[in-house]
Length: 398
Image (tube, rainbow, N blue to C red; front, side, top):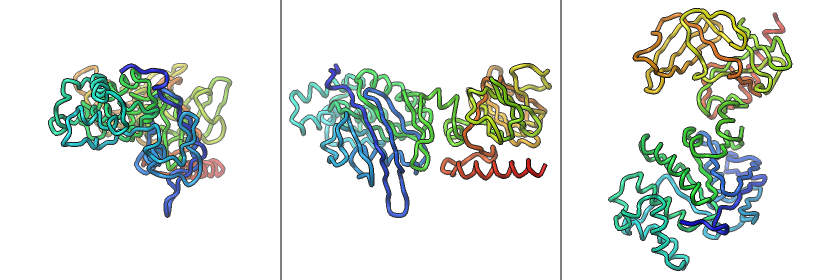
């Protein structure tokens, strides 16, 4: 399906969007710009406001305050069917009595577009299903139905395509396959995709830009690699993957790094990778960045070491093995080790040390206690303040 400049996607701009329902605020003063032709993901837990945002863009909800612009045109008060938007839902909502071809061509017939069947065949070829054009939806697998729903949306050449958890009903292997196919299709058709999901892997695999939402606000936005390697808050650090978080006072600060006292251990973090450089701070490192050692390593420049600790759990997950290590005064540290040999490297009850290069650490803008792991909807800011106040009080008493 050839895409001409006039068919390509348009940018989306949300200006001061607030949406209140009786008893709660779903979105609060949201400002967001999505460039034309990009694949943008809104990622967050249930209740964070991501689906409400999508419904506002689609015209299925009306904002309490703010404006919605698509391609520079204000569509805030425009009816859903008048907006240059199509939506692919988790439930594909295909017409069971129509063939695949007629399902895809349905919107074209309604709009009086010339050559609807020819265009529908083009869309089906794009999703590699034209050979099934004569079948009914019930004769297709879940993945094939998902592709038909996508073809039906794309054939209308909307300026903006909204994806509402479109892969949620698929099994794991098919979901991963469709992630790659969706990205390929988006590259080919050149439309603007807004993908709403709670699945971090989906967001990181497909999107050019990811915005992590929490309680109606965007906590952090950027390229997937940036959010994963340099989370700014504990919520992002623990929602987008797992993190080991440690809290302590900064005891040294240089031009290139800071040193944090974590239960007596001196942990170094690059200054440019830390959001705060003085006082009580929270620092972190991803589990896969850690090395598991059965002997205490010699001190080395550029390497952080914690230990000794005791392995309390060993969990095999296929690609890697997860080790939980209980560290005195620190809590549980999680280590992901790639499975390079048969069986675990160490067993439960073993005494171990963990190490990581300084460059892999990061420092957060808020202060979070590392245990227990945060539930997605926790108020991370208030927890951070409480933890910081408690530690500062301990330091004052000392």
